[in-house]
Image (cartoon, rainbow, N blue to C red):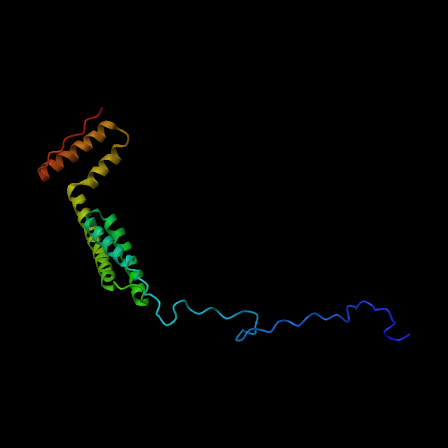
Length: 177
C-alpha cells in the first residue's frame, strides 16, 4: 500500500494550530492599556475656574450683623466668633489662590473681633446697670420670700418704686387675668 492508498485520517489536536493573531495596527501601544485620549481642545488652555469668594462675603455680612446686635451680648459674641472663623477660612482660600477677596475676608475678621470686644464691654455695662438698679437686691428679696406670695409682691413693689424714683420712669403693673 502506498501512501495514496491509505485512508485519510482526521487531524488530531496536536496537529491543529490556531491561526496567528492579526498584526497590530501602526502605532498601537504594546501593553494591556491603551494610552489616554488627547485633550479635547489641545493647544488651548482650560477655562479659568471662578473664584470661591462666598466665605469672605459671608464673614463680612455676619460681622456687620453681629455689630448691630452687640448690645444683646450673646448675639454679638457668637456672631463675632463665627465671623472670625469664617474669615480665617476665607483667608486660607485666598492664600491657596481659590478666592480673590482677601480684603473682604480681613474686614470680616476685624469687624468680628470688634464685635466680640464691644460685646464684652456691654457685659460690664449691663452688670453696672443691674447693680445700680438694684436687681440683685430684688433677687435677694424674692429668694428670702420663698413661696410667700405677699412677700414677693412687696419685693416687686419696692423694686418698681426704686426704678420710678431713681430714673423717673413710670412702670405700670401688668394686669392679671
